[in-house]
Amino acid sequence: PLNAPAVFNSTYTTKDAIRNNLINYFLTNKTERYLNPTFGGNIRQFIFEQITEGNTDLLQETIQTDLSLFFPNIEVQTFNVLTSPDVNTVQIELSYNVIDTGITDEIQLEFN
Image (tube, rainbow, N blue to C red; front, side, top):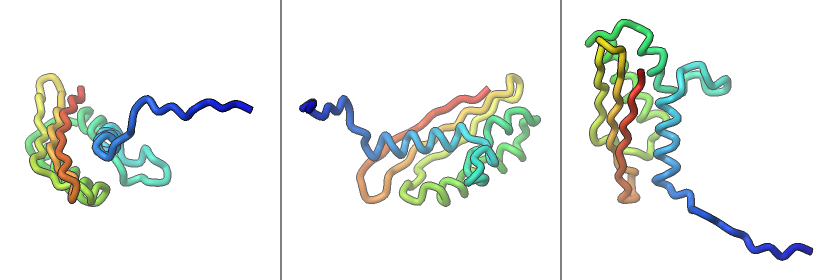
């Protein structure tokens, strides 16, 4: 029989898991997940529309609502949607705390 020891090269921490889940949320468009059609930031779809202050505000409100729904274990500290309409670019900046853990983190993503 093989007596190979179990080898773990890295640990997958709560901080890493939440960060990866948040990034996955932002990279997913709504209806992209068959069994969870409301999941996703819809940002890739957004950059194909004309970027205006009105639809940027709506995107930010929608994402903030989604974050509280899909990620009830995080507390958003700051959340910004920055746009560059001339080059059709959207930048997401999110800083957050994981409730009852003392974990803080931030994410910056750019979509073009």
